[in-house]
Structures are given as C-alpha cells and as structure tokens.
Length: 397
Ligand code: CTP
Image 1 (cartoon, protein in one colour):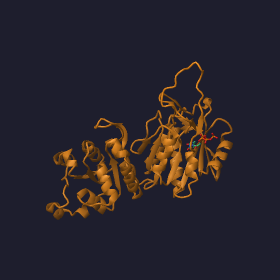
Image 2 (cartoon, rainbow, N blue to C red):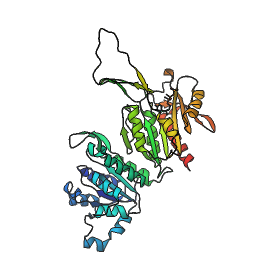
Image 3 (cartoon, protein in one colour):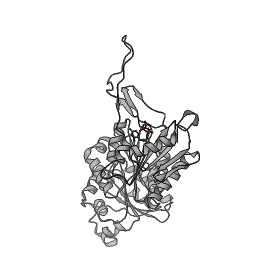
Image 4 (cartoon, rainbow, N blue to C red):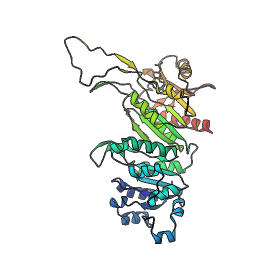
C-alpha cells in the first residue's frame, strides 16, 4: 500500500504518456496522492485536463508561471514529495538529468529535489540501445536513481525490443518496494537467470533445461526487500519478475556484456545456467545434409561470468553469489567451485533427473560459504529465494 505517500509524477513526452493516466489511478487507488508535472512535450500526448481530472489536483507545467510560483515555488514543489517518479522518462529527459540541466520545470525539479527519484524509461528501441542513452543510464544509476523497466515488446513505432515503458502495476510494485524501506532499499542487485542459447546456425542452437524459475523467484524476493534489481536473463520459460529492470540476452557472450553494463552493483547473484561452450564458428546459413556425412562442430569456451566478476580487481560487488548445478558429489564439487571461481557463496543443488529440480518448482540447496556448509531442507523455489534474499540482506548490514 502507498497510504499517505506523496508522489511527484513527471510525465515526459512520449506515446507511453497515455499509460501515465492509468498509473495515476493505480497510485491513488492505493492511497497515494499524485502531484503531476506535465512537460511541454508530454502535453502533446495527454491533455492537462485528463491528467488533472485523474490526479484530482492541478497540473504543473511552466517554470516561469507566476501564479504557481506564488502558491508553491518550484524548489518547494521538488521537495514536497516522498518520491519523484518520471514516467515516461524519455531519452531527452534522461539526457537532461544525466547532464544536470535545468531549462524547464521538469529538469529543474529533478535537479533541485532531495527525495528519491525513480524513472520508467520509454523510447524507441534504437534510441534505448544508443550508446548515448546507455551512457546516460549508467550516469543516472551512479547518481542513485532507480530504473524501472523498460520492457521488451511491440512498440507503437512498429519495432520490437526493449524500450516499452513498464506497465502501471509494475511501476506501482517497484514504488511500493522502494517506499516500504525494506532492508535492501538503496542496494543495487544484479541477478542472472535462465539458460543461454548458443547458435549452431540460424535455426539451431545448444541449450539446457534451466527454466529460469529460481532466478525469477530470487529477483522477486530481492525486489520485495527493496533492492533495485537488474535482471539479466537468457531465454527462460518463466517470465521475469515484475517491476525490475530486465535485460534479455541469448548467448553467454551477450550475458557477459549485459552484466558488465549493469555494474557496479552491491550484490551479484549468478543463477543463470550458462553454456560452458559455444560453437566456435556458428554458420550464418542453415547447415544442410550432405553426402560427406554429419557436420563436425568445433567448440570454443565461453567466458566464465561468475569467475570474472568474483575476481574483479576494482569495483567488485560486496557480495558475489554463484549457483552450482551438480549431479554428483554436490557439496564437494560446490566447495571446490567456490574456491576456483572466487565467489563468496555458492548455492549448490543436485540436478540429477530423479530429483526433478531442473525445470521443477522445488529445490533442495546447500549454502556453501567460508563459514562452512548449510543444508537447507527441500522447499519451493520461492521459499529458497526468500530465505536467500533475507540472508543477503543480513550479510550487507
Ligand atoms: N557461470 C557463469 N558463466 C559461465 C558458466 C557458469 O557465470 N560461463 C556461473 C553460473 O551462473 C553459476 C556458476 O557459474 O552461478 C556455476 O555454474 P556451473 O555450470 O555449475 O559450473 P561450471 O563453471 O560449468 O563448472 P563445471 O563445468 O565444473 O560444473
């Protein structure tokens, strides 16, 4: 619930601004009050009248509005909220924020505020992927701004990919977690999840049976404790957690790049089942049957993302947690793996087919740390995730 919470909502100029109208309703349903600020560009997409009618209050638009200034100066406006939310956060607004510009009401409020700021980016996929936007994103994260979404999907411009604004209920969930002030509030946690797909040719790939269930459960549990979660996932069966930043990848190499972009963070949890090898030179054409017999696939080793992050000389996360999926000598192998990779904890599980763990809903894990080995009873993957998230929160205190 958001009872009594005051949200300053800055609505930027993008087609996703229409979702801000529903967002206002959802926030108010949960007891929050919403003070809306509509940028000039935002006003091209939704009318001040709709925003005002839904918020039940006036809409602020102009830095130099004498009436507004007399009633409530812009500095006061920027500080009169429990949280400032920018939705949609356009590429332009993010650039202004990253530069510290203050040339209109929205950017001035964002520069003057002393309350937490969250942004829900929305833009065309190429604009999102552009190095300038990614640089700005990194700067904003470094400034302590929490990022919600964007999601993958069909976009109003007809393209597909990351850039769609998170749905209103996902944004509300992220706000609730942030304002609840859980033990991981203000902490940035990276989670990798799901399998990777390593291409053989354009239609075939090497994969594994990971469903992504444990990773999604972990991302959800960490976000529920207030963490800002960046969720890097391969092609999983289970959808990613709501209200967190999701980065979708296919291959181990792409996962490494996404992880590097997501750093720095306070905690990194590597729940992904990363393929150890890729086909050395995947064909860009479909391999055909020939009279010469079967094709010979040569393999190359994939980067070990967990080991690379664990062994970072500078900027290593304070806590690095790996998973070990084993079929034999689970604890011995996991203990050796922790040393070899250099991570702080290993969550080890037995993925022999008879356990039903890989792709199932339950897990029986052993937590291996420098304090020794704890055997946890078999329980649901959600329960494992909640206990692990609680342990992570305790370790960061
Ligand atoms: N991992 C990773 N990058 C890789 C391989 C694994 O980040 N290229 C991470 C996994 O996310 C997991 C941990 O390393 O947290 C252990 O993965 P696992 O597959 O069990 O270990 P391997 O390195 O493959 O070791 P082995 O082949 O000896 O079992």
